[in-house]
Amino acid sequence: MSMAILDKKKRIRRFFCLILSLLFLLSSCKGIAISGKTENIPGYTEAQAMIVVGSERNRIQNVMGKEVWDLPVAGQVEKTYGEYFLAKTKEFLQDIRTLNLMAEEKGIIANGTEMESIRTAANAFYQSLSEEDKAFFGNCSLKDVVDMYVAYFVAEKTAKSLLANVDTELSAAEAKVISVEQIVVQDENLAKELEEKVKLAGANFSYYARQYSEDPELQKNLAFGEREDEYAKVAFSLEDNEISSVFSQDGKYYILKCLSSYDEEATKERKERLETAIRSLHFQESYEAYQKEHIVRFREPFWKEIDLHSHEGSTADYFFSYYQEKVAEVK
Image (cartoon, rainbow, N blue to C red):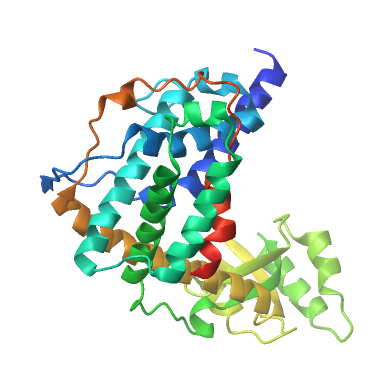
């Protein structure tokens, strides 16, 4: 197999990871034990489902080419990317339907202002479709587009309601990140000699680190709480520009210099990541508990008949981008 083909496959996999992480944000709660009762509710019509399937097929195909659907996929029940894409899209829409069930119980709806923006987005999307687009999208109507935007909007609104009372605020200490420079050697006597040298007035710690350290990684960022060894204990005890005494760990000898006892930018980024993880975990726990008791499965026959190679003249790929531009901004 040529390097060009291998490279293209790698790009396709990376592209799919990106697409699926965006498109299937609300469908990350799979793999749970099934113990509830399958909901006896209708799925989406073929036209409604194909609006999403078609737009996303075009978005991927417009970048990667139509051959992407026949490429093999590893580690999945599905054999090709096309089959995998359809299975994941179906799961995604089942999750939207499940969240809409939850919305009905909670009385969550799109209000007048929100419906106005949804109709504006739906009308703009629908009017931009070519006849080939409409044919591929199951001969969809404007009402079908409105219904799918409403379904997606209410699902998002419901997901946010699950997070409304979640306390994700972390203290600066809990998210703290520091940066240190290190010298690592295996000889204790050499370590003690280097300690004397780097602590002399005007000594250049970086110079000795480059000359003697056996670890090529001379600088490290450390996050509070991620490790509880002697290295972390010493590192977090240092003030800016302070140099530690020699200490040993795992048969090696270390000298650390604190470059920053509080890396503001790295701490801010870590704090945001941790808070996002907390919110994600809370959503997942709440959603899975509901999903176990309200199992939604689409069994409409058209799902088995979708041909991703059909209607090659259809190129409309902006169902979700229209939503982000015209609907998400009002939330």
